Image (tube, rainbow, N blue to C red; front, side, top):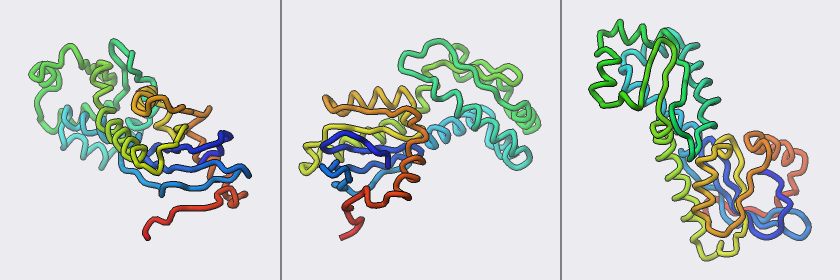
Length: 231
């Protein structure tokens, strides 16, 4: 939860996995929950999964399995590198995006005796979209955006289903928080999907959930009523 100083009804969406809830800001400053929290595995970690699946397809299951088994530090470096780069992918990105990959991944791929990586890129007609040299992976912006497609579609589908409920027709604002909310692709997709509703992305959206949790710990009375998960 993130404290919002707007009146009326707001849909609050957090990233990581996607969790959505709907609150009404009361005149006394407290929040009345109008829809129980719900969501699914469509956040930033799902994008990570798509990237890892793509690397697995390129380098082979054996290479990725050995990387995680014998060089976990290198595997975590892949995720950290991707975390810093994926937020720079926008709807307008062009050219290629450069990502660093550990040399160990190439070594495990070679040791497995799989198809030469350059030959595989050529066979899949990816010469214009993918370039791998030593510890540098360069992929087209189009390829990078494809890793976001399914998570964003899942997020938008869930939001629109919630907002379509008759009891929530008066929701006027959408508040995006969490790391996934910092992605321009997500922001643009949500703004398009919710029509004329106001979309708010606070500064340091990735920290908003943590700040809200601390605030709620000190002031639990901020939420005046909740919806039970099961009735």
